[in-house]
Amino acid sequence: MTVPLSDTASLAVGDLVAKVLQEIGVKEMVGVPDSQLRYVMAALPHEISVTHSVREDAAVAIAVGARLAGRRVGVFMKNAGIGTSADAIVSLLVGFRLSMPLVIGWSGSGSDHLVHHRLMGSRTIALLDALGIESIVLKPGAELELLASRVKQADHKRRSVALLVVPQ
Amino acid sequence: MTDTITRRELAELIVCWTARERLPLVVGNGFLCREVRAQGDYDHILLLDTGMGLAAAVAAGVAEATGSLAVALEGDGNHLMGLGSAASVALRGSDILHVIHWNGGWESAGAQRFLPDRVHLETVASLGYGEVRTATTALEFQAALEAGVRTAPAAINVIGRMGCRSASRSEHTMAEGARRFECWLAGRGR
Image (tube, rainbow over all chains, first blue to last red; front, side, top):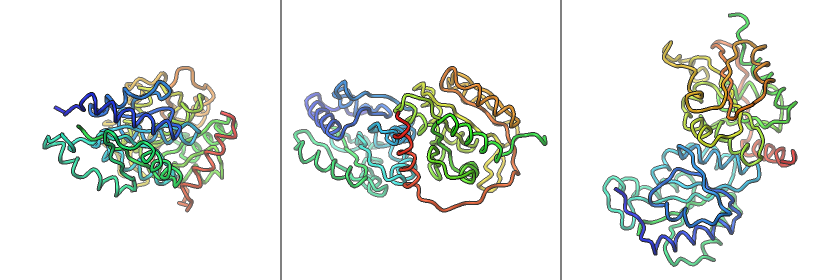
């Protein structure tokens, strides 16, 4: 059982994610569905399509192919998918020096105290850091301009950013 | 046995065909990557020296963004490791031609073989690819390429063998290769 975001908090975070993705020109989000992210993905405007892959590494690879062909695609996943996609992130994103927004449901943080979620939750930031991905923790009410500026800066440096959605 | 397609013949044919048809080609790592690189310097080819099992998924992203066919080439070791890529391609109905070279093992990693009769060629068909062809000789492979793709995603299972001479490794920058591929795609007028 997972801990769902409350409606109010999730809408706020969902709006935040949508605006940041629009700011950097994302046209599509590809990923593996996650219960923590379902409201966030539902909050995306029609201009950003949501598509699926069966594994997180395939999602990263699809987004990389699209990016090389000029279409801006981001990736979404549950934090457990960081392990599954580690090689794709290092080999393709870092290897090709591409920037990409990763929207990640941070299970095992915030109000999510499930023991099996905490195992990955407590390691999430360290894992991302080891992979060369900057982590930005999204909270309801976060200042959009500041957030967008950090994402744009990373984009300019061809570095990928993880937007972490905390269960409320 | 003597007319079984070699890795070099496979590389020559697919490089020539994609160059002529102006199709992007994404190549999975291992000996195939080295062999394709040995064919020359081509901007329409993206070589994945790392990222095992991801060639088909990268090609899917290219195909979907450009709205036209992209080609993926990988060995059976890459393919089996990356079944999630093939499953995603099938799920999304991506417009790719997926060429899989079956030599029965992990040759570039020391020629360890799969157990005989434990690996079957039906993987992509069972995942839902629109059409799957099989080629054992260079002539059959050429014919399979020329037949094009009617129902995407499509695959060609190329039945090869171990023991073919391999091209040597070469040094290059992955990011530079990606930039050239990116520029070629942009210049093709997607």
